[in-house]
Length: 376
Image (cartoon, rainbow, N blue to C red; front, side, top):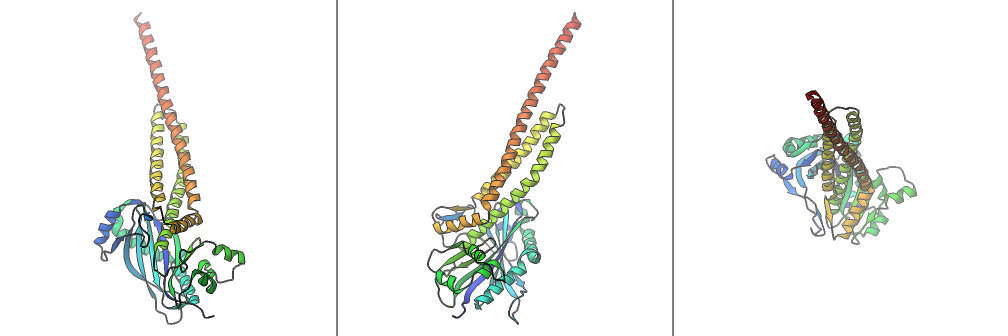
């Protein structure tokens, strides 16, 4: 049986960063319009009606300058590959940088080799410099549109192998029989166990007979003869939601010990300003809860699903696979702790104020009695 050739396709590498509390997309679009390239669009799902599934707030897609990737594991004599670069800005403060590598007519094994070479070039520590350079270029232009910028300490990676056509048309079932997707989905060169192979291929979906999507934690294979990008867009949103929830989870992890220290310091100090200190700390905690709640609601509503059952299944599976609900529940638990602490501090502030009023009344009564005695 002859090896399949990928005649049309590409490899898409994503890295997502949290860069701000929120992003003013209108202002960012205006700022980039003055840039040398000036190319921006508002992202929409291309093949899905808005009433079936749509972005909560349409992200802003920006075209950056191409990058040249000197890739290893390529056939001898291949020149460096020039990749298309875009950035997608989300109003809740996330940015997704995408490096898209077009694939020439390649045998399947060479296509998998190229995908792994791209992963080596831009993935993990080896690719940090590439991403940081792109992010610095983006920040330089759009920084005035960032509301409360943050260091990019939290990020997520994802890698897509996208095929529009093979050398012959195939159904999804035929593709699963003719090609081994495991090396693409795992990045492993050694043969995996039957159990590991089954787990890698478990999350696979088709709508038509001739399309196929297979998801894993950090990679996906998409066969889409019609060239629709909706599946990749939906998976990007799921990754952005994971990124933001991880950011808030780490933020609250840092905030809880600080909160305990502040509460202890406030309670250990007894003076006439105790009520004010309780009230000030309660206001700080309330502000934190309000801000995180507002942003998590924006993240939860990043993609609104109503009628498209197929994309909804992929989206739900991706959220579950990426553990977004688990991280979200952890964030909600920590917010609940802070809310309870806020309520307790508010009650203590009220109690402290009542005690001060009672003390003041008793003092006035005492002064009146002393003055009455002195008069007589």
